[in-house]
Length: 339
Image 1 (cartoon, rainbow, N blue to C red):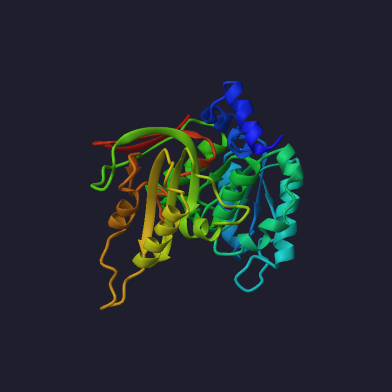
Image 2 (cartoon, rainbow, N blue to C red):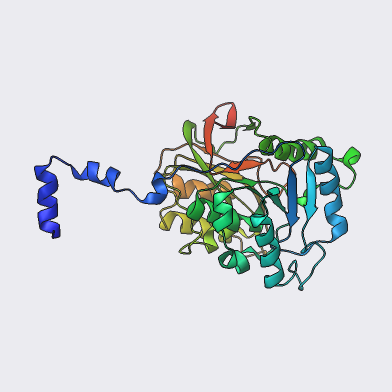
């Protein structure tokens, strides 16, 4: 049947183009997110380093604390391995992650640290067994590569949170915010309800939104544009954070989000921590991070909040990527609730 006859058939059948578009929406939008099983006491958490290098000694505080939570810990072969800045060669990092993804006894995988390296191995991973038995993948920063890929290609939820290199070596000396954010990992892994709040900021835009939460490190999201791991933000709540970037770089990356349509159909926008590089005297960009973001979203009406407790900072709470959340922004500040 040619296109002309097909459209005539639809009209005769009383099917509008609006109805047809809803019926023929992409399969990825129709799929329900798969939520891995929450952990029970005695379950095993694997630790691997798919990105940067980390020593065995550096992961010990995380190992000890997670064991005190009642979990077993399996340390991967990449911990202590080194290929310059990477946690082992590409082959070693791929094999270690693959083993943990395929091992039915490992119920969650905590990435030891960020840095760089995840994009070098993402296309080498076979997710076939993982799709059949999903498990939690935990981390942030460079691990945004995995969060985006799992959401776009597999529709599997994951956890954006601190990693082993953020656990304090002396828990008794940790600041309250450090303790609270690390304990949030346990809360999310155990399936407990979580609610995070942030004080009001002058750049906030009030409103209420419900949708799937997706996002992570802004520069990583930008570099994934056009790839198999590129996220679809339509109808979702997007959160972003970054560190070590100049203001003009933040501006460029937000223009990328806008020009690629990632800001068009959001339900809400959450702007986390942004550690900005000092500008060179005489070469200032002349705009704040708040002004940069506000310029890109002024034509939309969804709620927006700034300074949310997520990012390369001590108040970096665990978030479930891919699952439904309720965002509320009003005069009292902002709140995000997993639903």
